[in-house]
Length: 225
Image 1 (cartoon, one colour):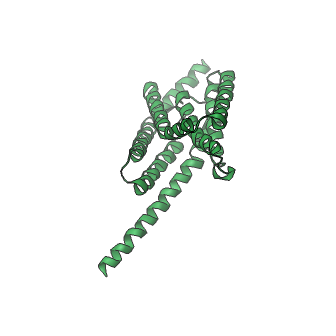
Image 2 (cartoon, helix red, strand yellow):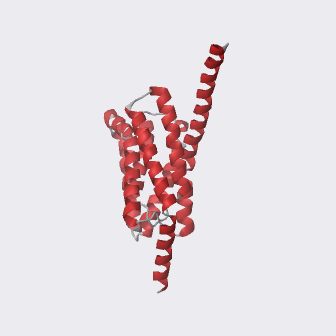
Image 3 (cartoon, one colour):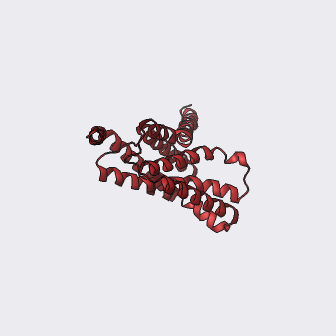
């Protein structure tokens, strides 16, 4: 009876963990960028946000779309990714717009979109597969750039706490799924690294709220003077 109970509990625990992990992954996929976009629009500022970080995020989000188009996957199988992709593109444009580089931002997005479309239609299978494989590395690199920017500025600017939190919980969910599917692997290690970097960003946001507020007040006073 004890063995039977233990056998019953393990699959149940895995089922619950998978459901929780899946829930946080979905939230990260669809909603993580929304609070960041809304914060920029509400505050009218993109201070502290790294162009390189969001450009890498845009690349990482584009890779699965390019891969799907190149392999003729049905539209409904990857269409939902366009929502997050468009939000990230909007954030990247707004960052450059608030830096006084509106035209450069438009040109960057047009060139980037053209290159991705060209790759999806004309690139060799090996190139598309390499792009897909570099997806996680680009995500991690984007977090490194934003972490360095926060450290250099001494505050996190308009970086959204909720967006960072959703990204962190989503990365935890990916660790659970990855470990169950493949056990200990290089992909799992990349997910663990991604989660660690997200946690560092979350700590930076939470610990530098006073510095961020002080920097915003100083900037406001400077404009008034």
